[in-house]
Length: 322
Image 1 (spheres, helix red, strand yellow):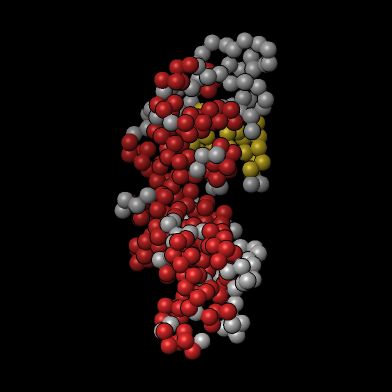
Image 2 (cartoon, rainbow, N blue to C red; image 1 turned 120 degrees about the vertical axis):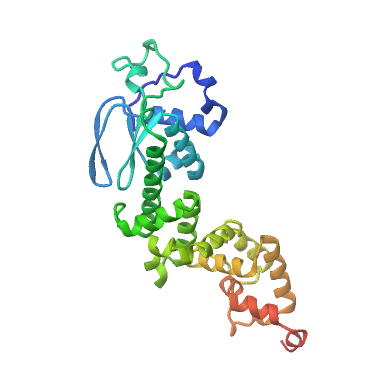
């Protein structure tokens, strides 16, 4: 983090494109605030890194949490800032170093003291010195490398693995899908959904690019991720369960395993919150066997796919016999 003090922002920033989008403006100002005003060394993931004046250590998730801007929006905004030459980005194994363009020109060293007037200059209007010499082809290559790094870093973060960004076996499967026109968001969505499904199971070992982005798997996994983005959360289903089934055991901790059960149940049953409410109404009045402990009991039993299938297949005669 930068030291206490002020930064210079000229009113011309109000005429800049980033002022037309509140999140972009917030990101730009925060970058200026967090940039070092003098050279420093920082311990980042156990690695001693020299962060020069006008630079900052950057990670999407951490910056998103500090700024309140979603990772998806932050990724897009950073891409726009890089394209416009306002910042440069050096990708490391687990983080990036962001360099503010023209920092020395607009943020005068030695005058950042409380009570003194601001020096002349106008940082934030349109500094464009970092990337002007980069060709479109080089820029696309850099963006592809950054996307590959982001995917591998996210897998490592979730799983605790130490996959190497430089490993060809990882890069080729990610690069292949990017070259086919799929977006970084598509790949990230697959990582998130399959991690939620496989973490803590035997399938966890398959949380690697070779499996996640293999052409024979990719379309199916992408469809699952897009569907999963529309399914209810575990918290939403638990609230409905408590409301509709007050005599049933209450749900305590929502574990990763329970979240996986909810996702699987919702995808299999094409479930929405309203459909789940109707399902419980039907269960409570028509399928009295769910109240019998010998079959199972509670929330996890109700969201089990076997229970869903049996409820669907229960005939009038079966219900009468129950």
